[in-house]
Length: 331
Image (cartoon, rainbow, N blue to C red; front, side, top):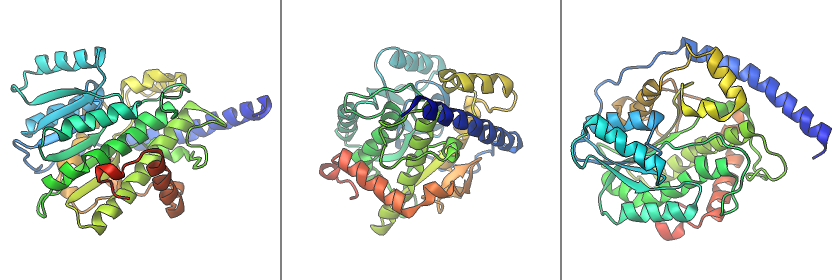
């Protein structure tokens, strides 16, 4: 791409960011965090969450343990694991309520190893929360995938299919198992290149983030339809947890500026987690599977994400990139 063309595109992206970012902040200013009414009790049931060592993920874990669930946390070995164990110690959780298993979502081999470790426990999984995410500079994973696409979407696509057998086993007609996928209002940026998912022709950190979060919403819709077609007792939801004061803000200069100027508007990580827990445990969303949520309410994502042809193409390309047939995936 030519120098002037690339810089003009970058300029337009910044202008678009200012407009959409201001609108998102306005919506957050007007929003409140709904209290969780009559959550389903989950004593002795199992949940799996990705990236729960800090932020929204950690506060989500606290709420799940409080509900009686045992939680398997997938995050990287090293500092992430150490941070998780330190938080568990400080929280004083009951022995055996939280377990760590190594998970690096940028490596599909690691995702498969994690999935196998969970499956080998031979326990029903009542809840899967695809929480982990990144907004990172351009880089390709060892599998050849753009990092944000791999971590935010593709790794979760694979993990969900790996764990589907246990989710199906855990669900019942009266209490379905659930999958909660963290997306973002950032999908409204409207960037989705179905023929360049790895950003080989053009990369912008925000565009890549928007694309990965759009993919999550489309995946949620298609998987819901396939689960429903087979009458499997599993519900799936995509949610925007809110404009959150989290570590993600430190990963980009414009996000840092936005954070400093809107610190009083953004919700806390704990408040963001309440929205996740609402989708995970609230009876109020039982009949809203397949939807995208903002402020704990089902809303329509942008038109681009609702395009049926694009949804179908993304699903097909994802299955081509990752052979899920041997794991009982829904083809």
